[in-house]
Structures are given as C-alpha cells and as structure tokens.
Length: 415
Image 1 (cartoon, one colour):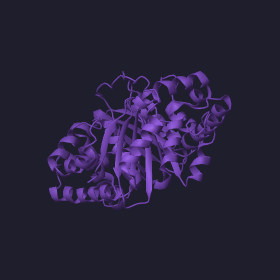
Image 2: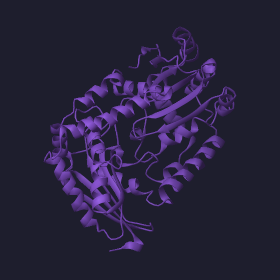
Image 3: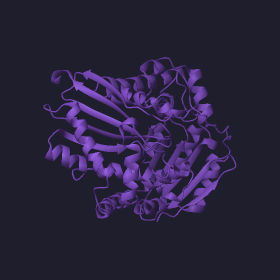
Image 4: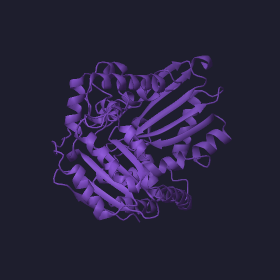
C-alpha cells in the first residue's frame, strides 16, 4: 500500500507526496504531459531533444549538474511517445536543492545557439548509433509507420529522420517549451524521507510563483481499424534473420489493456513462456523470442519478435507462431497457469514498489492516466483476470487482419 497526499497549486501544478522513513533519500520526479505524439509531423524528435536541452542550463543556473553533484544527487530523464519524465534522487537533507533545480528549469532555459548546437549533435549522434548504424536498430523506424497510418505513434520517440533535428531552430524549441513546459502541464511527485509540512512550504517557495501557462489541449487523429495484414520485407547486413509482428491493442486505460499485458507475459516472458518453450527449446526455430506491449496511453501495439536460426524460413516460423496463438484462442490452458503467472506479476510489482524512485514515478504516471488510486488498485484488477479474458483478447486482437509484419532478412542468409 502506497500512502500519498495529492493537491494542486493555484498555477495548476499537480503535487503528490509520499513519506517513506525507511530511507535517508528522496526522489523528486517531474513529469511533463508531452511526448512524441504531440509533435508536428514535419518537426519530429522535439520531445526527445528537449529531454537533453533541459540539462543545458538556465539564465540563473548555467550548470545543472554542478549543483546536483554537490548536493550528492543522481539524476536522469526519459522520453516516450506519451510523456517526458525528469527525476533527481538525493539525500533528504538536501531536498531543497533538488526543488530549486527543478523549479528553475521549469521557468525557462538558456536557449542559446551554443546550447542548441551541443544538444543537437548529441541527439543526432544517438539517432545514428542506436537506430541507423546499429544492427536491427531501424526495425521500429520501419515498423511504426507500417502499423500506424494516421496516429502520431507512426514515428518513434527519436523522430522520423535526422533532418528534423538538423533543421530545428531556436524559435522552434522556444515555441515547444512555451507550449508544453509549464506548471499546468506538469506533475511533481516526491517520495522518500520527507517532512510533509516542510516539503509543502518548499514547494510553494520554489514553484508557487511560476506562471501557470496555457494547458495544451490535444487534437490527435486516431487510427482507423485495420482490416488487412500488412507486410514489409527488408534485407540488411545483420548476422541472422529477425521476425517482427505487431497487433493493434487497446489503450492503457482500456478494459482489455491488462489482459493484453498479461497475455504478453504468458507468451513471451522468460524461458518458461509458451513461445520460448515451443519455438526455442522444442522446435529450435529461434535463438530467442519474446512478446511485449508498448504500454501506450492511446491504443498501442502487442509485439512478438525473435531472432531466427539460419535453417528456419519466415513462412515456417510464422506458421508455428500461429499454432501457439491458436492455442490461446481455443482456451487450451488452465486458470492455474494464469494464476501462477499472476504470482510472478505481483512479485515484480511488489519488488518495484520498494524503490522510492519507482514510487515517485508511478504516482506521477497514474495521476497522468487520470486515476492515481490505481497505484494501489491495479494489482487487484490483474488478479481478477481469467482464462476467458485471455481467450477473448487473443480472438479479438491477435489475428492476421490486425497484424503488421516485418521480415528482416540477413543478406548472408537469404533463402
């Protein structure tokens, strides 16, 4: 059970506090309600670029890391299609320094040509290293626009192409900051060894006077229902063939989302999963295979992907995967198997909640979803899932008319 206090400042900043006296540390988490889905289709990668720019200094504090290090802090950030998250963990006695740093950059950045150029080069290099020059790195650059045709999930967080970052101007980034980085579009969550009343005073001191900004209202084009299988065959200089298949699935707050998440665990979580046991151990068609969900706030994707052995053909592995899915759709498994998997899910959930950093982020994330109480209630929702729920999910979503597939072929293993 995660106890918390939630309130809203006059400027619209949502605040969540969790006191944990078992640790001498505290994590300050600032989540901004902006991700890659909020970008202009002709100027993508900006949400991720801003993740880097936020560490480039402000007029008042040119060197964020210098103060953070002197306070004994560790910090980082990440961007997704749906959000951008920043966190700083430090000794509780130095918490005010962390609040000062986060409030300072919420008010504005340096926005100098030099800072933009430095971070632009960092992001472009990351784009090249992780997506263009890395074996299999371009799979999602190709798979996202294959699965999506209208929704902005059709481009990954890094952006559509390097040119969008290369062409970014100071006016572009200033406009993006003004639109999205404000108290009314942010959630501040703090977890650790805090004094609640003192923390509230510091929050007012450092965040209370920041102008609220205008809350961004989304108008995202939603994806139309897919009615036909989509395929793409790619040949690359990679060591082995890779099979990648995705299916559209419900949004994060949809009734069937948890079913999809549990189904992905049943199929592809670890060496005891169905796909591993059948296709790696028994059939020996893959060296590794797994299943996962993107976890997107809007309708996302259920993914099955694996690295194939040289002797296997794409047709063969897809047919064998279909046999496993057919077992799901026919309900050829027991509730005890589902309950055993749920024990693993709950164990992972409880382990994650030990960390004050995880609790700080999860509190902010469930607040973003619109129901913060899910931090304590969602595990019960998982526990209520049955064989019939999985059968219905698989029969509705894990079908070829709802699928997009990339056959990623090694040039040295063409069959």
